[in-house]
Length: 105
Image (cartoon, rainbow, N blue to C red; front, side, top):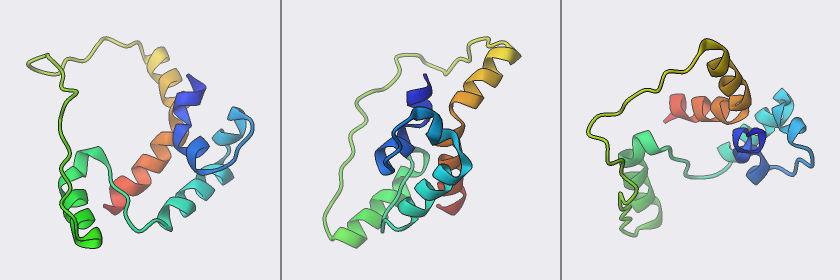
């Protein structure tokens, strides 16, 4: 679970130990490296990303939606406060990076 909670960091930086990915300095280094990329997008704001991509690269981008949930309405599973806290701690590195770019985009 710790690997998935810091997969952005492991893809962008060269951390040897997963525990290192949870240090603030490594999270900040990942954000700085991603800031140097001309185009960064997030799924919730895919429309503006497509527009920017097409303008920047001068090509049409088509992203298919193939992995849709069969559920009519999203449902939230009951998660205890203790489990929620553990999940948030495991996902903290990725979440900090996501929050940074979510505010920026």
